[in-house]
Amino acid sequence: MDYAKLETVMRRLALEAGDKIMEIYNSDDFEVKTKSDQSPVTEADEAADALISAGLRAAFPDVTLITEEQAATHSEKAKDFLIVDPLDGTNEFVNRRGDFTVNIAWVEGGVPVRGVVYAPARDRMFYTRADGSSVEESAPFDHDAPGALTPIRVAEADNSALRVVASKSHRDQATDDYINRYATAEAKSAGSSLKFCLVATGEADLYPRIGRTMEWDTAAGHAVVTGAGGQVLNFDTLEPLAYGKDGYANPFFIVTAPSVDLKQG
Image 1 (cartoon, rainbow, N blue to C red):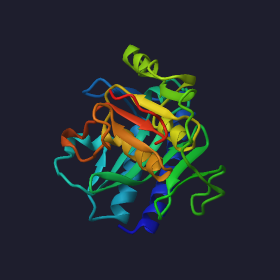
Image 2: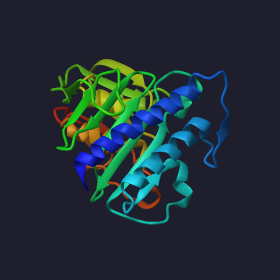
Image 3: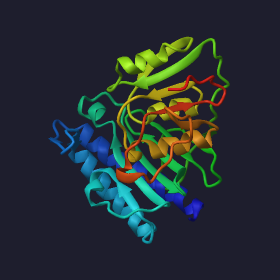
Image 4: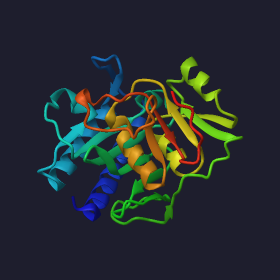
C-alpha cells in the first residue's frame, strides 16, 4: 500500500462525505429506515457510503473494500482490506446530538494500521499519517491541503484517578459494573468512534465496550489509537483485537493507554 497516497485519499473522502452528511443533517427532514438487524439507516449513511466507495475504488481498484452499507455483499475474505463506516453513530445523527463520525481504515495482516475519524458536527478530525503516527487536524478543513496538525498521544494514566469514557447510546449495567472496578476521577459519555479518539488524545484513559460492534465501527478508531501509542484489546483475553473475522463481528473490547492497570474481563 502507498501510505502517502492513502493518507491523502482517506482524508479527502472523509471531508467530502462529512459535507454530504451535514447537508442532510441540517435539512428540515430526512428519511430513517430500519435494516434487517433493526439498526437505523438514513439517506446520509447511503450517500456517504456511495461517495467513499467510489473514491476508494477509483484510487485503489485492486484492494478489497468492506463497507457497512454493503455488508450483505461481502463474501470475499482478505487479510488486507479497506473498511468503511460512512456514518458511525446513526442514533446520534437521527437525534441531532452531533456525536457521529466518518470512518475509513486500512487493515493489513488483520491489524488496522491507518485510519481517519472525522466528526463533522464537532469540527474534529483525527488520522494516521503516512508514517503511522496519529494527529488531530484543526478546523477549518481544506479538502486539498491539510491545516494545522497536532501530534496526539495517549496519557500517562493515574490509576488512582482514571478518566473513563463509555458509550452514550449503548451504556448498560455490565459496563457500569466493569467501570466500578476502577478508581475513577471522571466518567464521561460520548457517541460513535469519538470514544477511541478521546483515549488517543489523552482526554480519557480507558474505554470499555461490553456490547455488540462490527469491525467497520472500530477499525479507524483502532488505527488512530495505535498511532497514538494506545491499545485495543479483547475484553476477555487482553490480546490485541484482530480483524478479518467471520462476519466482521467484534468481541467485547477495551481501548486503553498502556499505563492503565487493567482488570481482566
